[in-house]
Amino acid sequence: MAFHLLERGREEGRRLADVLAEAMEKIGHCTQCRTFSEQALCAICANPRRDASQLCVVESPADLMAIEQGTGYRGQYFVLMGNLSPLDGVGPEELGMGLLARRLREERPMEVIIATSATVEGEATAHYLGGLIRELDLKVTRIAHGVPLGGELEYVDSGTLAHAFSGRQILPG
Image (cartoon, rainbow, N blue to C red; front, side, top):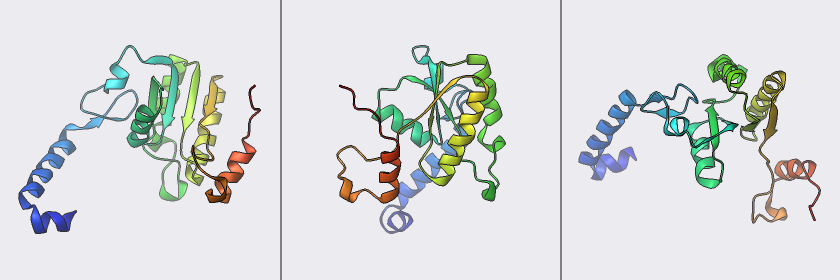
């Protein structure tokens, strides 16, 4: 992108730099869910029509947007802004686990949905979250991982296939 702007779009590059500088100054974090927001509360947290009985814990604002755009989920969120990664110095405090625990104690949602990625760090984070949530005697669920919709088994990697196979469910009917 830098080469393109230098070669063909210097004025657009200057405008982009100005917009980015403004965003860095104006955009902060929602005080309730920690996603990016220009206000103290983001639009989702400020919306009284959202279902407060469900709280979905995600790794990033991009994950929040993917769920918003790709599902019918209309509950609340909590954004970790990463995963547990002791080797990188990322522990529970860096992910706002204290804020999350306080929110869970105060709001007592009917279900907490863990929507972390299927990476080693995502699974470790999900495991930690599960323990935290169960200590508060709340229902905790984990999003499913496995074969993508429309995917053919012969093209799915063995780790994904093994995870999908071990998580099989009884076919309703």
